[in-house]
View 1: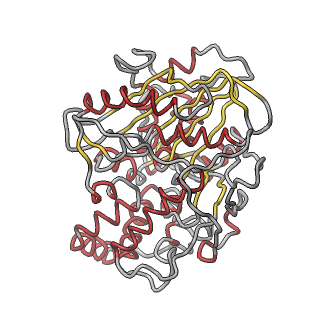
View 2: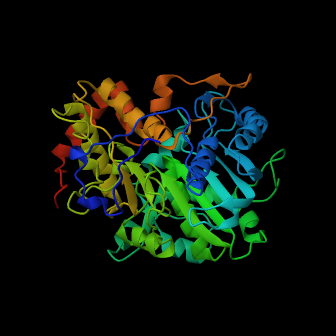
Length: 443
């Protein structure tokens, strides 16, 4: 088995532009038990992204996933079975030119061997990243300029719609999460499982609240990309509300920062990070955001290098080497200006870093930069885990274009959109600078 060098949870000590890795990609790589549990969880996460390259109206997408998901799950092994969902949510359900805005399901296994050697009943809540060209998903990714008082929302009831905090009421000691993230978590909690899916009619919070789970049962929340942001937020909301049964664990990959330092601290207190139990794998840790040091999405949304040297948006322009591309710098400047409207400073969740490979030469143009970025956000993780995204087709669905796929992601999608609208980016940045907005990353 090839090994992956990894760092500890304090990634602020790492310099992202001086990282190296001996990772090699293979089609299938199986870890010895009990480490195999991590590959199974990641495979379930990838299963939630099965519609990643497809678009259609909501009913067609749901019919496809309902037909294909059981076969995908059975191939994972481990006695997994979908017990709730799948659910697909679209802000515009009749729009056949986009993918799902959100996709999620719950899988169950009566007997899972965990990395501590114990064998337990387990549930996995798998949350997909935004699907390509989903305008609502892009809204979730970008809705970081407004925040929600997380404590107030949970105390008032997580089935209630989160309300953006008044910017004048935001205090340094408060616990805040991005409004887009909180709104998406609310959707995940309150959308019922549809006809034809498991546990039809039940909402996720109802299902999880009513499972007959002894204390030994483990409930794992997992997701990649936007799913790597939503799954820890969802877990923390359920735990804070008292609705989480059994022992909760989080296994997120490639996620951006959901909230501020107080939010990250609350997450770490509620779900204490574990130490690596299978060091040869590089990914055998719970309750951390597992990230590639060359993945630009986990660099969002912290804007202060002094707070998090290894995870902040200021690292993005030079993450693949120098010289940097001026247009990338402009997009990052624009992103920081929008993030700073939140009146908070975003901070990363506890992270476990896998050290990626810097290209021999820095990308020379925006298209090359995006190509390297997409590979570091998707292919890298698939190679590390030896688990590939499902490749499915359904007659009533169509494939997305490469541009539509790029538009899916936070940061990557912003750069792609800017590449398609360079005049608007230049004008927006010029207007910000004329109004006195400065690059304040060191403050």
